Image 1 (cartoon, helix red, strand yellow):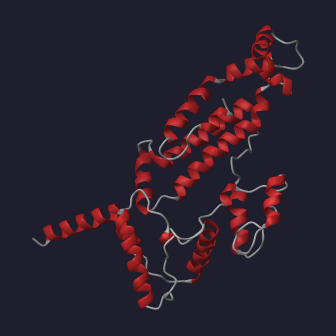
Image 2: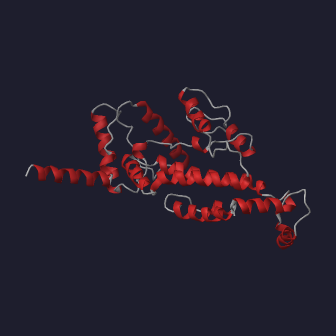
Image 3: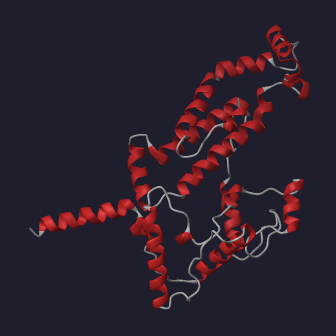
Length: 289
């Protein structure tokens, strides 16, 4: 189940449904069931008839052909599953804007929303520790690991534990070979958005036809105020080759960090902001009579 569960969809849309499936399976493994399984699979005892029957049924697919059969042997698969769930949850949390975070806090009071998912995730990790005998100190992604690469990058220091990279964050040929050969590990938390956030794709809470207009208006105002130079505006991506497009996004990301001040009117494409402005205008009109 642990290996097949990686096929579940833990994206925001299907997160609750997939988590429900995993939790239902985990609930089967009560402390008594775990104790019984460990006793039956103890290497110091002769194989129990149930275990022997199980091995006979599986035949060439029996896990005993690849090592000792035990719940602890599932430790790596359990860690992979938890990391997949955790990374999808962290990705969802990073994409929340100001209003989403407020709504999340309100929903958490009623045991719903992303904030309550953290409670469910912590409970799931505790169950996993009991099932496959993970150490009490186990964390899905350790706090120091999550912050290490970011802290090193902010101080201008290369992370020697990761693959070799260029100054813009792209992998060198050596870094690619290091990953392929398995000589280094890449922390998924280090994967950052490449490009200018103001020019990113339309989100589900934005009106796509307003996104392009607000980006154009923001660029026009920034050029007129001298906040950016003419020519830094976005260009059509339809006629850009894939490799050139990647380098274009890298350059956008570098250019966006150069500007300490820039006008960004993209919030006006968010339908929630539009409704809020309309509501405030209506209230103000009612107050003034």
